[in-house]
Amino acid sequence: NTPLSEADPEVAQIIEHEKYRQFAELELIASENFTSQAVMEANGSALTNKYSEGLPGARYYGGNEYVDQLERLCQERALSAFKLDSNEWGVNVQPYSGSTANFAALTALLKPFDRLMGLDLPSGGHLTHGYQTDKKKISSSSIYFQSMPYRVDMETGIIDYDRLEENAQLFRPQLLICGASAYPRDWDYARMRKVADNHSAYLLCDMAHISGLVAAGEQESPFKYCDIVTTTTHKTLRGPRAGLIFYRKREGEDKKESLEARVNQAVFPSCQGGPHNNTIAGIAVALKQANTQEFVEYAKQVRANTQALAKKLTSYNYRLSSGGSENHLVLWDLKPLGLTGSKIEKVCELVNITLNKNSVCGDKSAVTPGGVRIGTAALTSRGFKEEDFERIGELLHRTVEISLEVQSQCGSKLLKDFMAVAAKSDKIAELQKEI
Ligand code: PLP
Image 1: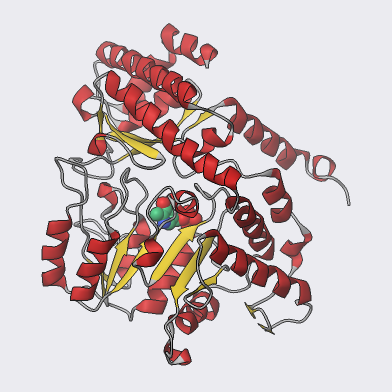
Image 2: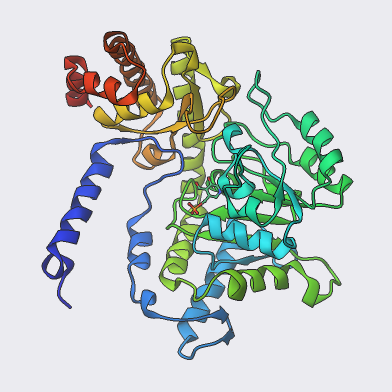
């Protein structure tokens, strides 16, 4: 029972440094959050020692009395957090992450080489929604299945549902995926359902980014329209790193052919082994917390903060993809300024602002993204309000102005030359001290 600081001071120190970094920097990565002490405790508990392949009441190992209680509690809380009736929906809480949840869902719904359509990565979609480039199949979701992406309209930044419908007529997908990693607008699920129905396709929503907002009623719920809903648990939902798969139950269905049976089989044994019970405990705690009025207030504040940030950036005449935001993130198009997302990400890092480069509509390739993605979920968890995000907007404006000066002094387009000049900038040093 030697404490970590004595057993392994090297690792203990790295953890302390990371903890300090997280709290000293302005954390604006849209997929991150600060989970609670209670979730951390559950996640670091003795449950990590236990093997429990199978489902509650039907395990391949002994000694699962408490693990069964835990997994059932987590399932109940997952349904309750999203206001779901257990006669209509079930949930598998074992996926290790969002990516494995998605691959298990595809395994449950499709046969190898079946056809799927998801939002293209440069349009804000996730890798696991069938990502491939012109030259290469990148994600296992495009390697094992045939993928045809749909995209946002290049002018408006909003999903081009008409084009999606037209392309679906040609491609005849067996699965349509909604949900994204970098899309600042809510979804027209009714329209997606109609397209799916035209081709007797399944409709899956990966609500990873917005699941906390959905639980709080701050985004439309995909459950009304979809057959399967997947999510990560660590973004706006503020839990530990993991995934969930919700599946629709149908009255009178053949149990063996049901989505329930197919999803459970796909998670284990098709895609995973033993569940991470410590993580499931952390999810259960986070779901309890997400099912409170306090969390509803948090989700409202996340949206209000995003609006405040969007307004501030727009007041400087910057271009935001889709002109604003309805959720927890803004996508800032830097192309009109002649700056790349990589340069601003790096300069922000120098001044202790953490965000990430991101493709924005009109980008030629995902390799050189023309913008940055900024999320408000993490700092809202730390109590930031609208006026704080206005100040962040001002700091970002100053960062961009300094970056433009650096670019004009640099005379090279290369990131490394740009950063060499930036590292010597007094203005950057001043801004770093201020933040
Ligand atoms: N789905 C979406 C929409 C995501 O944005 C992400 C990650 O950012 C994932 C799935 C993958 O989650 P994980 O990193 O837990 O595998």
